[in-house]
Image 1 (cartoon, rainbow, N blue to C red):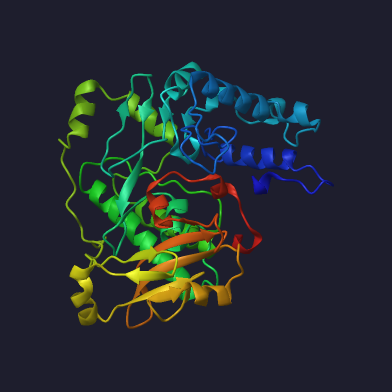
Image 2 (tube, rainbow, N blue to C red):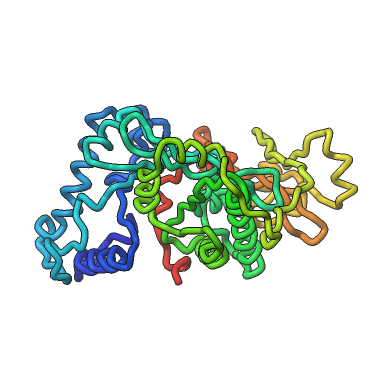
Length: 400
Protein backbone atom coordinates (compact mmCIF):
# COMPACT_ATOMS: atom_id res chain seq x y z
CA UNK A 1 0.00 0.00 0.00
CA UNK A 2 1.34 3.35 -1.06
CA UNK A 3 1.70 5.06 2.29
CA UNK A 4 3.77 2.17 3.74
CA UNK A 5 6.65 2.51 1.28
CA UNK A 6 10.07 3.95 2.12
CA UNK A 7 12.35 6.01 -0.08
CA UNK A 8 15.33 3.69 0.46
CA UNK A 9 17.24 6.10 2.73
CA UNK A 10 15.05 5.92 5.84
CA UNK A 11 12.99 3.25 7.56
CA UNK A 12 9.52 4.41 8.54
CA UNK A 13 8.55 1.29 10.52
CA UNK A 14 9.54 2.56 14.01
CA UNK A 15 7.74 5.86 13.45
CA UNK A 16 4.60 4.23 12.08
CA UNK A 17 4.48 1.80 14.99
CA UNK A 18 5.00 4.68 17.43
CA UNK A 19 2.11 6.59 15.85
CA UNK A 20 -0.08 3.48 16.08
CA UNK A 21 0.84 3.20 19.75
CA UNK A 22 -0.21 6.82 20.30
CA UNK A 23 -3.58 6.07 18.73
CA UNK A 24 -4.06 3.00 20.94
CA UNK A 25 -3.04 4.86 24.12
CA UNK A 26 -5.46 7.67 23.22
CA UNK A 27 -8.34 5.17 23.37
CA UNK A 28 -8.64 4.05 19.78
CA UNK A 29 -9.07 0.36 19.06
CA UNK A 30 -6.66 -1.54 16.81
CA UNK A 31 -8.42 -4.19 14.71
CA UNK A 32 -7.46 -6.45 11.83
CA UNK A 33 -8.05 -5.87 8.12
CA UNK A 34 -6.01 -8.95 7.16
CA UNK A 35 -2.63 -8.95 5.47
CA UNK A 36 -2.79 -9.18 1.68
CA UNK A 37 -5.98 -7.22 0.91
CA UNK A 38 -6.97 -9.86 -1.63
CA UNK A 39 -10.49 -10.72 -2.73
CA UNK A 40 -11.11 -13.84 -0.68
CA UNK A 41 -14.38 -14.52 -2.52
CA UNK A 42 -12.50 -15.02 -5.81
CA UNK A 43 -15.09 -12.96 -7.72
CA UNK A 44 -13.03 -9.87 -8.65
CA UNK A 45 -11.50 -10.35 -12.10
CA UNK A 46 -8.90 -7.65 -11.40
CA UNK A 47 -7.71 -9.36 -8.21
CA UNK A 48 -4.89 -11.93 -7.94
CA UNK A 49 -7.27 -14.33 -6.19
CA UNK A 50 -9.82 -14.40 -9.03
CA UNK A 51 -11.49 -17.79 -9.23
CA UNK A 52 -9.90 -19.00 -5.99
CA UNK A 53 -12.30 -18.49 -3.07
CA UNK A 54 -10.55 -18.92 0.25
CA UNK A 55 -11.05 -21.97 2.41
CA UNK A 56 -10.39 -22.24 6.13
CA UNK A 57 -6.71 -22.97 5.60
CA UNK A 58 -6.27 -19.85 3.46
CA UNK A 59 -7.79 -17.66 6.19
CA UNK A 60 -5.68 -19.38 8.84
CA UNK A 61 -2.53 -18.61 6.83
CA UNK A 62 -3.64 -14.99 6.41
CA UNK A 63 -4.12 -14.45 10.14
CA UNK A 64 -0.83 -16.19 10.91
CA UNK A 65 0.95 -13.89 8.46
CA UNK A 66 -0.76 -10.85 9.99
CA UNK A 67 0.51 -11.68 13.48
CA UNK A 68 3.98 -12.62 12.29
CA UNK A 69 4.52 -9.52 10.17
CA UNK A 70 2.97 -7.09 12.65
CA UNK A 71 4.39 -8.31 15.94
CA UNK A 72 7.67 -9.38 14.37
CA UNK A 73 8.11 -6.07 12.55
CA UNK A 74 11.29 -5.04 14.38
CA UNK A 75 13.00 -8.42 14.25
CA UNK A 76 12.10 -9.13 10.63
CA UNK A 77 13.17 -5.67 9.43
CA UNK A 78 16.21 -5.39 11.74
CA UNK A 79 15.17 -2.02 13.20
CA UNK A 80 14.84 -0.77 16.77
CA UNK A 81 11.58 0.57 18.21
CA UNK A 82 11.17 4.16 19.33
CA UNK A 83 8.84 3.27 22.21
CA UNK A 84 9.98 1.32 25.25
CA UNK A 85 6.85 -0.83 25.33
CA UNK A 86 7.37 -4.63 25.16
CA UNK A 87 8.53 -5.48 21.63
CA UNK A 88 7.92 -1.83 20.73
CA UNK A 89 4.12 -2.16 20.84
CA UNK A 90 1.69 -0.69 23.37
CA UNK A 91 -0.76 -3.50 22.60
CA UNK A 92 -0.66 -7.25 22.01
CA UNK A 93 -2.43 -9.85 19.92
CA UNK A 94 -4.96 -10.18 22.75
CA UNK A 95 -6.10 -6.59 22.16
CA UNK A 96 -7.07 -7.30 18.54
CA UNK A 97 -10.66 -8.50 18.80
CA UNK A 98 -12.36 -7.24 15.63
CA UNK A 99 -12.05 -7.96 11.93
CA UNK A 100 -13.20 -6.52 8.62
CA UNK A 101 -12.51 -8.54 5.48
CA UNK A 102 -10.85 -6.65 2.60
CA UNK A 103 -13.44 -5.75 -0.06
CA UNK A 104 -16.04 -7.04 2.46
CA UNK A 105 -15.22 -10.37 0.78
CA UNK A 106 -15.75 -13.20 3.23
CA UNK A 107 -16.24 -16.94 2.79
CA UNK A 108 -17.53 -19.63 5.13
CA UNK A 109 -13.93 -20.56 5.95
CA UNK A 110 -13.47 -17.27 7.81
CA UNK A 111 -15.73 -17.97 10.78
CA UNK A 112 -13.88 -20.91 12.42
CA UNK A 113 -10.61 -19.00 12.00
CA UNK A 114 -12.03 -15.93 13.75
CA UNK A 115 -12.98 -18.20 16.64
CA UNK A 116 -9.54 -19.86 16.66
CA UNK A 117 -7.76 -16.50 16.91
CA UNK A 118 -10.01 -15.18 19.67
CA UNK A 119 -11.97 -12.54 17.77
CA UNK A 120 -15.22 -11.33 19.35
CA UNK A 121 -16.83 -9.50 16.42
CA UNK A 122 -16.79 -9.16 12.63
CA UNK A 123 -17.72 -6.10 10.53
CA UNK A 124 -17.38 -7.66 7.06
CA UNK A 125 -21.06 -7.67 6.11
CA UNK A 126 -23.62 -5.02 5.20
CA UNK A 127 -27.29 -4.88 6.09
CA UNK A 128 -30.23 -2.53 6.60
CA UNK A 129 -29.39 0.56 8.69
CA UNK A 130 -31.62 -0.52 11.60
CA UNK A 131 -30.04 -3.97 11.99
CA UNK A 132 -29.25 -4.93 15.57
CA UNK A 133 -26.03 -6.96 15.96
CA UNK A 134 -26.56 -10.66 16.55
CA UNK A 135 -24.27 -13.32 17.92
CA UNK A 136 -23.17 -15.81 15.26
CA UNK A 137 -22.67 -19.57 15.47
CA UNK A 138 -18.87 -19.10 15.56
CA UNK A 139 -19.30 -17.22 18.83
CA UNK A 140 -18.73 -13.57 17.88
CA UNK A 141 -21.03 -10.71 16.95
CA UNK A 142 -22.02 -9.62 13.44
CA UNK A 143 -21.87 -5.79 13.27
CA UNK A 144 -22.54 -4.88 9.61
CA UNK A 145 -22.16 -1.60 7.78
CA UNK A 146 -25.50 -0.01 6.97
CA UNK A 147 -26.96 0.54 3.50
CA UNK A 148 -28.12 4.11 3.97
CA UNK A 149 -30.18 6.56 1.95
CA UNK A 150 -28.36 9.25 -0.01
CA UNK A 151 -29.77 12.72 0.65
CA UNK A 152 -31.46 14.24 -2.38
CA UNK A 153 -31.56 11.02 -4.38
CA UNK A 154 -33.51 7.78 -4.61
CA UNK A 155 -30.30 5.76 -4.17
CA UNK A 156 -28.47 4.06 -1.31
CA UNK A 157 -24.81 3.64 -0.38
CA UNK A 158 -22.80 1.62 2.13
CA UNK A 159 -21.75 4.00 4.90
CA UNK A 160 -18.07 4.11 3.94
CA UNK A 161 -16.08 6.97 2.41
CA UNK A 162 -14.74 4.88 -0.47
CA UNK A 163 -18.29 3.98 -1.47
CA UNK A 164 -19.21 7.67 -1.48
CA UNK A 165 -16.19 8.26 -3.71
CA UNK A 166 -17.51 5.65 -6.16
CA UNK A 167 -20.96 7.25 -6.10
CA UNK A 168 -19.72 10.81 -6.58
CA UNK A 169 -16.77 10.46 -8.95
CA UNK A 170 -16.26 6.88 -10.16
CA UNK A 171 -13.97 5.75 -7.30
CA UNK A 172 -11.33 8.49 -7.76
CA UNK A 173 -10.99 12.14 -6.78
CA UNK A 174 -12.82 14.20 -9.37
CA UNK A 175 -10.46 16.01 -11.79
CA UNK A 176 -10.78 19.79 -11.53
CA UNK A 177 -12.85 19.54 -8.34
CA UNK A 178 -14.07 23.00 -7.35
CA UNK A 179 -14.69 24.20 -3.80
CA UNK A 180 -18.41 24.34 -4.58
CA UNK A 181 -18.28 20.68 -5.72
CA UNK A 182 -16.47 19.67 -2.55
CA UNK A 183 -18.94 21.48 -0.32
CA UNK A 184 -21.92 19.88 -2.07
CA UNK A 185 -20.39 16.42 -1.62
CA UNK A 186 -19.57 17.08 2.03
CA UNK A 187 -23.07 18.37 2.79
CA UNK A 188 -24.73 15.43 1.05
CA UNK A 189 -22.67 12.96 3.09
CA UNK A 190 -23.26 14.82 6.36
CA UNK A 191 -27.02 15.06 5.72
CA UNK A 192 -27.16 11.36 4.86
CA UNK A 193 -25.27 10.34 8.01
CA UNK A 194 -27.44 12.57 10.18
CA UNK A 195 -30.59 11.03 8.71
CA UNK A 196 -29.17 7.55 9.33
CA UNK A 197 -28.55 8.56 12.94
CA UNK A 198 -31.96 10.22 13.32
CA UNK A 199 -33.92 7.16 12.19
CA UNK A 200 -32.01 4.93 14.63
CA UNK A 201 -31.82 7.43 17.51
CA UNK A 202 -35.57 8.04 17.57
CA UNK A 203 -36.26 4.50 16.32
CA UNK A 204 -35.00 1.12 17.44
CA UNK A 205 -31.56 2.33 18.62
CA UNK A 206 -29.55 0.01 16.37
CA UNK A 207 -25.90 1.14 16.39
CA UNK A 208 -24.70 3.61 13.77
CA UNK A 209 -21.51 2.38 12.12
CA UNK A 210 -19.47 4.48 9.66
CA UNK A 211 -16.36 3.07 8.02
CA UNK A 212 -13.78 5.62 6.85
CA UNK A 213 -10.21 5.37 5.60
CA UNK A 214 -7.41 7.91 6.14
CA UNK A 215 -7.47 9.27 2.59
CA UNK A 216 -8.43 12.83 1.70
CA UNK A 217 -10.54 11.90 -1.32
CA UNK A 218 -12.32 14.74 -3.11
CA UNK A 219 -10.27 17.24 -1.09
CA UNK A 220 -11.40 15.94 2.27
CA UNK A 221 -15.16 16.04 1.61
CA UNK A 222 -15.75 12.72 3.40
CA UNK A 223 -13.13 13.28 6.09
CA UNK A 224 -14.78 16.58 7.04
CA UNK A 225 -18.30 15.15 6.78
CA UNK A 226 -17.38 12.43 9.26
CA UNK A 227 -16.03 15.03 11.71
CA UNK A 228 -19.08 17.26 11.27
CA UNK A 229 -21.32 14.29 11.95
CA UNK A 230 -19.46 13.22 15.10
CA UNK A 231 -19.53 16.77 16.50
CA UNK A 232 -23.27 16.92 15.90
CA UNK A 233 -24.30 13.64 17.53
CA UNK A 234 -21.75 12.49 20.12
CA UNK A 235 -22.89 14.97 22.79
CA UNK A 236 -26.62 14.20 22.50
CA UNK A 237 -28.54 12.63 25.39
CA UNK A 238 -28.24 8.84 25.63
CA UNK A 239 -25.61 8.70 22.85
CA UNK A 240 -22.29 6.93 23.32
CA UNK A 241 -19.54 7.16 20.71
CA UNK A 242 -17.45 4.11 21.55
CA UNK A 243 -15.10 1.52 20.13
CA UNK A 244 -16.45 -1.75 18.79
CA UNK A 245 -15.03 -3.69 21.73
CA UNK A 246 -16.72 -1.37 24.22
CA UNK A 247 -19.99 -1.94 22.38
CA UNK A 248 -19.49 -5.73 22.27
CA UNK A 249 -18.73 -5.76 26.00
CA UNK A 250 -22.03 -3.92 26.56
CA UNK A 251 -23.88 -6.45 24.41
CA UNK A 252 -22.29 -9.32 26.32
CA UNK A 253 -23.49 -7.76 29.57
CA UNK A 254 -27.16 -7.78 28.57
CA UNK A 255 -29.34 -10.61 29.79
CA UNK A 256 -31.29 -12.48 27.11
CA UNK A 257 -34.66 -10.82 27.87
CA UNK A 258 -33.23 -7.30 27.86
CA UNK A 259 -31.38 -7.90 24.60
CA UNK A 260 -34.56 -9.30 23.04
CA UNK A 261 -36.58 -6.29 24.19
CA UNK A 262 -34.00 -3.81 22.91
CA UNK A 263 -33.76 -5.53 19.55
CA UNK A 264 -37.57 -5.46 19.22
CA UNK A 265 -37.67 -1.75 20.12
CA UNK A 266 -39.57 -2.39 23.37
CA UNK A 267 -38.30 0.55 25.39
CA UNK A 268 -39.28 4.15 26.08
CA UNK A 269 -38.17 6.20 23.10
CA UNK A 270 -37.17 9.84 22.84
CA UNK A 271 -39.47 12.12 20.91
CA UNK A 272 -38.06 13.57 17.70
CA UNK A 273 -36.89 17.05 18.70
CA UNK A 274 -36.76 18.31 15.11
CA UNK A 275 -33.07 19.25 15.26
CA UNK A 276 -32.19 16.90 12.38
CA UNK A 277 -34.20 17.45 9.24
CA UNK A 278 -35.51 14.71 7.01
CA UNK A 279 -33.55 14.32 3.78
CA UNK A 280 -35.40 15.53 0.72
CA UNK A 281 -37.55 13.27 -1.40
CA UNK A 282 -36.11 13.76 -4.89
CA UNK A 283 -37.58 13.91 -8.32
CA UNK A 284 -36.45 10.49 -9.45
CA UNK A 285 -35.40 10.43 -13.09
CA UNK A 286 -32.63 8.01 -13.99
CA UNK A 287 -30.26 8.21 -16.90
CA UNK A 288 -28.19 5.44 -18.45
CA UNK A 289 -25.25 5.22 -20.84
CA UNK A 290 -25.86 3.26 -24.04
CA UNK A 291 -22.81 2.43 -26.16
CA UNK A 292 -21.82 0.45 -29.23
CA UNK A 293 -19.58 0.49 -32.27
CA UNK A 294 -20.79 3.92 -33.43
CA UNK A 295 -21.47 6.11 -30.40
CA UNK A 296 -22.00 6.65 -26.67
CA UNK A 297 -25.36 8.15 -25.70
CA UNK A 298 -27.03 9.47 -22.54
CA UNK A 299 -30.51 7.95 -22.56
CA UNK A 300 -33.55 8.71 -20.40
CA UNK A 301 -36.39 6.15 -20.12
CA UNK A 302 -39.23 6.98 -22.49
CA UNK A 303 -41.70 7.34 -19.63
CA UNK A 304 -39.58 10.13 -18.06
CA UNK A 305 -38.87 12.23 -21.15
CA UNK A 306 -41.93 14.44 -20.73
CA UNK A 307 -40.89 15.29 -17.19
CA UNK A 308 -37.45 16.52 -18.31
CA UNK A 309 -38.84 19.58 -20.08
CA UNK A 310 -40.94 20.44 -17.03
CA UNK A 311 -37.98 20.49 -14.63
CA UNK A 312 -35.47 21.81 -17.18
CA UNK A 313 -33.05 18.90 -17.01
CA UNK A 314 -31.02 17.85 -20.06
CA UNK A 315 -29.18 14.58 -20.80
CA UNK A 316 -25.50 15.08 -21.50
CA UNK A 317 -22.41 12.97 -22.19
CA UNK A 318 -19.33 13.81 -20.12
CA UNK A 319 -15.78 12.71 -20.98
CA UNK A 320 -13.45 12.53 -17.99
CA UNK A 321 -16.14 14.58 -16.18
CA UNK A 322 -16.11 17.39 -18.80
CA UNK A 323 -19.56 18.26 -20.17
CA UNK A 324 -19.73 17.72 -23.96
CA UNK A 325 -22.98 19.74 -24.20
CA UNK A 326 -24.73 17.00 -26.16
CA UNK A 327 -26.41 13.72 -25.34
CA UNK A 328 -24.39 11.81 -27.95
CA UNK A 329 -20.69 11.51 -28.73
CA UNK A 330 -19.66 9.51 -31.79
CA UNK A 331 -16.61 7.32 -32.24
CA UNK A 332 -15.24 9.78 -34.76
CA UNK A 333 -15.52 12.58 -32.22
CA UNK A 334 -13.82 10.44 -29.60
CA UNK A 335 -10.96 9.63 -31.98
CA UNK A 336 -10.30 13.36 -32.24
CA UNK A 337 -9.85 13.55 -28.47
CA UNK A 338 -8.32 10.19 -27.50
CA UNK A 339 -5.64 7.99 -29.01
CA UNK A 340 -6.41 4.41 -30.02
CA UNK A 341 -5.71 2.16 -27.03
CA UNK A 342 -6.15 4.92 -24.45
CA UNK A 343 -8.22 4.94 -21.26
CA UNK A 344 -10.90 7.44 -20.21
CA UNK A 345 -14.28 7.72 -18.51
CA UNK A 346 -17.65 8.34 -20.13
CA UNK A 347 -20.54 9.56 -18.02
CA UNK A 348 -24.22 9.95 -18.86
CA UNK A 349 -25.65 12.76 -16.75
CA UNK A 350 -28.80 14.79 -16.26
CA UNK A 351 -27.88 18.46 -15.94
CA UNK A 352 -30.25 21.03 -14.41
CA UNK A 353 -30.65 24.65 -15.49
CA UNK A 354 -27.83 25.69 -13.10
CA UNK A 355 -25.43 23.20 -14.70
CA UNK A 356 -25.45 20.76 -11.76
CA UNK A 357 -25.53 17.00 -12.21
CA UNK A 358 -28.78 15.56 -10.84
CA UNK A 359 -28.36 11.93 -11.87
CA UNK A 360 -25.52 10.06 -13.56
CA UNK A 361 -23.98 6.78 -14.66
CA UNK A 362 -20.25 6.36 -15.33
CA UNK A 363 -18.25 3.79 -17.30
CA UNK A 364 -14.50 3.37 -17.71
CA UNK A 365 -13.26 2.72 -21.25
CA UNK A 366 -9.91 0.94 -21.68
CA UNK A 367 -8.00 -0.05 -24.85
CA UNK A 368 -10.22 2.37 -26.75
CA UNK A 369 -11.18 1.44 -30.30
CA UNK A 370 -9.18 -1.79 -30.35
CA UNK A 371 -10.41 -5.38 -30.52
CA UNK A 372 -9.68 -5.68 -26.78
CA UNK A 373 -11.66 -2.58 -25.83
CA UNK A 374 -13.47 -2.91 -22.50
CA UNK A 375 -16.27 -0.72 -21.18
CA UNK A 376 -16.79 -1.33 -17.46
CA UNK A 377 -19.60 0.05 -15.33
CA UNK A 378 -21.71 1.53 -14.02
CA UNK A 379 -18.93 2.43 -11.59
CA UNK A 380 -21.58 3.75 -9.20
CA UNK A 381 -22.60 0.14 -8.51
CA UNK A 382 -19.45 -0.14 -6.43
CA UNK A 383 -21.11 2.20 -3.93
CA UNK A 384 -22.91 -0.92 -2.71
CA UNK A 385 -19.87 -3.21 -2.70
CA UNK A 386 -16.72 -3.56 -0.62
CA UNK A 387 -13.74 -1.37 -1.35
CA UNK A 388 -10.94 -2.45 -3.66
CA UNK A 389 -7.20 -2.39 -2.96
CA UNK A 390 -6.89 1.20 -4.22
CA UNK A 391 -8.99 2.31 -1.25
CA UNK A 392 -5.75 2.21 0.75
CA UNK A 393 -3.64 4.25 -1.65
CA UNK A 394 -3.12 7.94 -0.97
CA UNK A 395 -1.90 10.67 -3.27
CA UNK A 396 -0.15 13.88 -2.35
CA UNK A 397 -2.79 16.13 -3.90
CA UNK A 398 -5.40 14.59 -1.59
CA UNK A 399 -3.52 14.93 1.68
CA UNK A 400 -3.91 17.78 4.15
